[in-house]
Length: 402
Image (cartoon, rainbow, N blue to C red):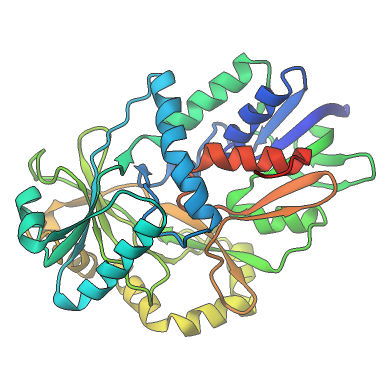
């Protein structure tokens, strides 16, 4: 196939890649920009398989990229959605303590939220139950600015804007190799060779492989964690008015199973967090031997497992037995029963883990001479996609950060 040239090549048609494409267009409207996505549609992985929560930024370490970009991303996401008639709801979130032992953790979380400049209100158990009669709570934090949206719809709108403004979106095009030269980046793809002046890689679940393939120096591996969700049936439309989250356990790496309102009016609970047998296989039985071998051969995985053995066994039990999963939900919503849990699509979190077994908890970007690799972009990446795109463009174009 004949070689093609472009000014900017972006690999990955999730929400971060699409936001980056639009940002580069706005800065260089005459440039040729090509976005490559191996799937037949954008947002087929993390961007289209998440909780749909517009996070306020309660949980993130003050001063971190997560805290900074999430705070900016709430307003940016809502502004984008309002401009393009994408519905959102600002339903707020209750983070509930279900026993006295969780109160100190709740108070620490309140301190962190205030350090991040996030609107937060502490409630007694009685005040929380007055807001949400179907919820059990000893105390709670109310995050009034948390909302919901269909991020898959946001991504599809971004794709439509990108192409309408002259961008080239090449679906069904897999990047199979390439290298970086003194002049730019050459990408080998399933539909031919592309030569680009600058390249951005938003490869999500394949981020480590893509970075290594193009010569970036990285010391992490993507470990895929499958998150199982259930839809809630048999319950009234006013089961809860807010999103309901448990107080996170600092000994566990993820936030826990939460009850989430959906834009279609229903509810889901989830996600769990269990090792996935395939990076892009969403069934419990999905298995990719190459993916699994990459995980099991990595020393950082075993060190991570050793640090979180109890949590891992608990998550595995919940993934295998719906009754154990249900107990997590019933801690704060006892009226949900086993008969109320209906199948719902799973997601897979691309989690970067260092060689010493440490979860890389912040967004991670790695630069080369002509490229930028988005190496770690877990939640709240969807909320933060627009400010992340600004950051990527600044770094790629050598703009000093403000």
